[in-house]
Image (cartoon, rainbow, N blue to C red):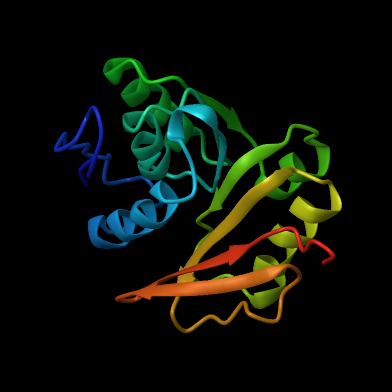
Length: 182
């Protein structure tokens, strides 16, 4: 995998083969960050990267100037890899080894962007717990976005606070946001 833009553009990151991960494709990452680039100044935001795996998404935010990044994953080897990579690139990524659902239950910190990349074989109930916990615990800033990556075969449009989705090959990003009364 490689970093597609920013300060570290073109740098390759090679994850150990034993990590239980499926990194977001470069094409899908580039498309996602083109969308986000029109909505946010990356150096002014707080990012929470859930099911962070290799840290692929966190590295993209850091490369674009985001200073406040928290990566959460339950796998010790993933957290160790993210720590090693972020230190070697001098990226400001903090990590927490935790079950994502337990972390969301206890967290009180708001974020501008929450990105979740759970395993594609999750049941719909497991996917639905992500927006439920994020919105129940008020973890998004007022103009914040929750973005859930999933297979194009999984439909999340019936879930709470769903806004829209974008498909890139076999990858799909579903966007969730706070519904404001007009």
